[in-house]
Image 1 (cartoon, helix red, strand yellow):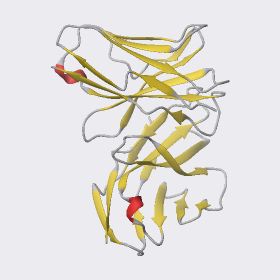
Image 2 (cartoon, chains in turn orange, purple):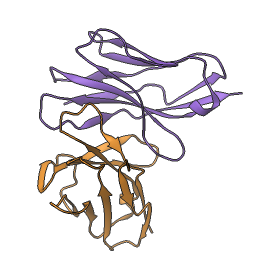
Image 3 (cartoon, rainbow over the protein chains, first blue to last red):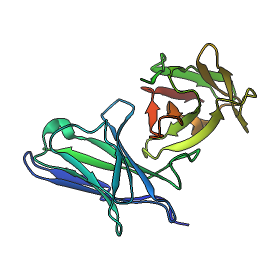
Image 4 (cartoon, one colour):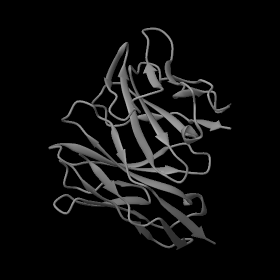
Length: 114
Length: 116
């Protein structure tokens, strides 16, 4: 059973470009979470999505960041007009239900903004 | 709002010895779970152990055990017979189950070094 998949694993963008990060949850999982880990810090919650719905986006910056989880295909975290401060590791996690004991984490996407 | 505090940025332990990592939390949720995750240099988040807040019995997983003090809002991790492979960042996390979002709130982590 494949785990949570994220791609790309490493992404380099110049300031002002767009970054698109993809997350394929575990089979049968319909709940997706995105977390950001800045260098030398813990993971911070960004957004919680179910298929076609954003449930909680309280951790998302108000501008430039958006997320979606369409009926078909992976969840996408999009960062427009990236700045150096966006450089971080972005983790996706999935669960079968919202109240599941455990979220299963992907390997992360490391975004570097030059 | 929920907060998780790990007051030890770094800890060291001799191989085969025992070490305890500290974690305290604050929560307004009436029911919740607590977790310890390990993050090795690969950055993969690996679940070490979890505790359901309504269970008084401390969780154990082989060499890993917790000391859960609900009234004190404390959740420490004890690693027995430490091995070189235990060296990693360790994160404590809280997950509330009554607000409907189920997001994890992580602490800032403790870097564990294991000395041969």
